Length: 275
Image (cartoon, rainbow, N blue to C red; front, side):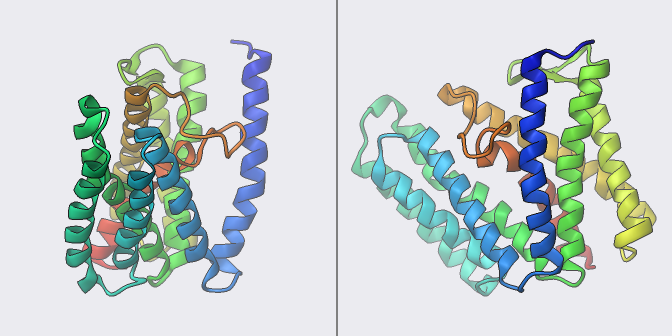
């Protein structure tokens, strides 16, 4: 199957964006000052929250402002920037604050319930999942754990893209993402598995072989689910991309939708079974 000029151009932009971000992230993880990667995570989390609430409530300034604040409030204790004892009070505050912020400007009333739900769910979605990435960074072998999460998410996305283009015949979930195929999904899982084996045999020997295989498949599958979840959000509000910040990728959320879900699986593994 020959590629169209549009496909080649999009792929070139994606590769160009990756060529800028990958060295910066590797530097932040392994060579930069200790504060740099958490600061980048906070920045990306803030931009992601801005995109999410701009999609959900584009004309509701108070709700969008509260969404940004509440997202960072949830991020802090999950990431270990604040002691985790703050988490329960913050969840209570963000729940009440989200509902009240949507009550201040209830019109159009037909979509008020949707906005109220996202005012509560949005900070949990982004604050908790971005917080899980920062949490991993603060653990022993933190840079390696975060690198593994990135391999799961971005490697699975790349493997799925090429497998889907080469072999894709059967739709995976057409109602939500018409272009994704079962064959592409399987290619993404294999790419994630390769990443886990790479970690076990090369840069993260503390991850045993059998856990590496199980974790890889779960994290890669979770990343694909995260991609579908973000597609569902965009389709529900009638937009193609969450933003335009990253050429060839769309917005921040378009690039990290799989990453945050993969990080949640690895976060649970590290938190429950240790490093």
